[in-house]
Length: 347
Image 1 (tube, rainbow, N blue to C red):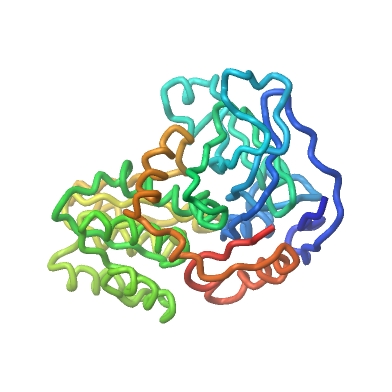
Image 2: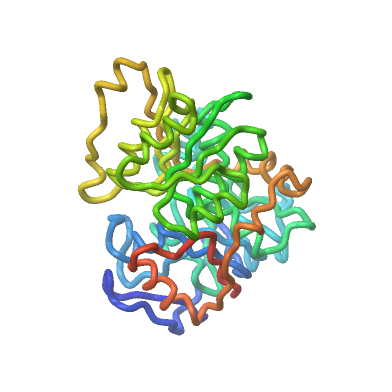
């Protein structure tokens, strides 16, 4: 099959002919029709994830059709070859303590396509534990739109709906208006909340404003600008980018008893980022992490998309082919990353 592969971290990825994946007994092989290009893929390519072995095929937010089912997938599950599906980027085992408690998104034995095994920048990709992790797509949802949900929108949905506990009348700031950030803005605006979109990029701020957010210039002084615009600080602030600067500004922009939600991945020196713990104690602030979304939580999100409450297709800024992935991945190293909006690969 054709796939985008790299053999060294940071070295130029290439489109290559590679062996097709073997279907696990309890898993499935998915024929990829569309897959998102995410900053997490860039982190993996740069060697920031120790679960990756070389050579490697990245890609982790995808939609397609079942090409093969494992020998131990029961007929009673209802899955058939040809079914239109997606899967969470965290595929749970279903057997560990976290899974049994209903927290599959932090499964102790999770697998992640594009990280723990070869991913979806390819014609075929493996999903482990098919009965638990496959998600049926509504007929009204196209593959490109479904792929845009995979990591960034689903992650933002859980961060906003479940982790942040946003309530009517509250205000929220979103730091970083890329794929995750714009998704969070779309979800919060749809809930009727006042949203501040924070970024250093004019294009990203324009995209946030188009979705209904109040644009706020990021960088030095961002927290003070949010406090002034919101009349004393926001109830919830989300770091959707992931850096020492954005996480610190996010916490600083909160009012008393506010909640900071960390969604953007933190690597290197940022993994041990300083926090204004004086403000955390004095204001009884909460610092929360949010890590993906379990398959069982997808139906409510898909229902909202199917009903038109959310339109994630509007967040897709660019569609490319598999041949264009190496250049697009490399472009994320430049200032501004991949730009505003999502890039989706049509396979």
